[in-house]
Length: 157
Image (tube, rainbow, N blue to C red):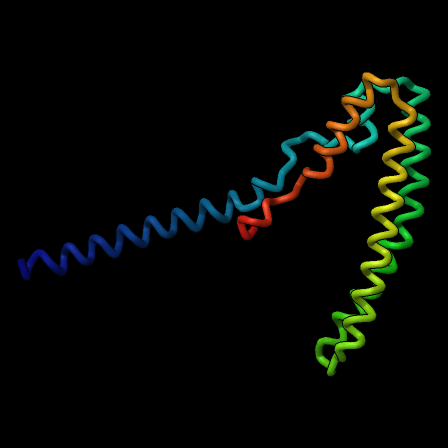
């Protein structure tokens, strides 16, 4: 057994090195595969909505106008939130006071509440443009869009 043991260990080490090398090559060559779109462009939500609930050209035009106005309105709030977060998180090296954190959180919460109110208002305005049949599809579309890209927080991901 003592004469076979070094040969067995040498063979096992070489085999493991080959397997590890192959695995590294596979991971390096395949690392961005999950992020590729495979040649297809992702349709914007306006076009997707128009296709999914069969909007008329006039409805589609009205929807795009409402959408542009909505994103112009909420964009200001998102910019403000981003600025406050940047200011807050850049002070982590300094002695950030509880009052700074509290004030920043309150501002962000207020702006997020405003964004939520504006978004609900926008969704209601869009819904009023639709026929009764389209509204059913729209309601399902909104739920699907809200859940898109979200992970289950209970699973720790």
